[in-house]
Image (cartoon, rainbow, N blue to C red):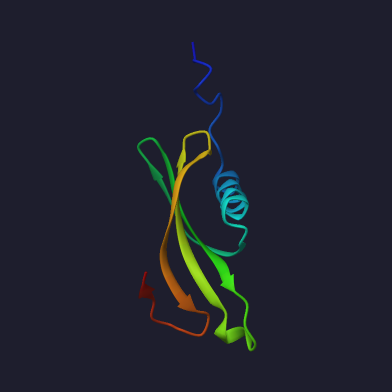
Length: 96
């Protein structure tokens, strides 16, 4: 028998990504731009999402930040960290 803490069904990849993006938006107030990476871990998920830190004109000068979110198996965010910051036009990324 499953405990009340365990999810009664596994999440799809789309649900994990959508949940991570929504929770990051709620926590930071920033708009998600793209999902960079999704990895299933032993006890949940690790998702990296780029968020728009600062809008600029022209768009190529926008500042994008990559955030790493750790989610539990039910898709609830346990932690998040900004791991990179770059201009939209930059090919190479800079460490934060």
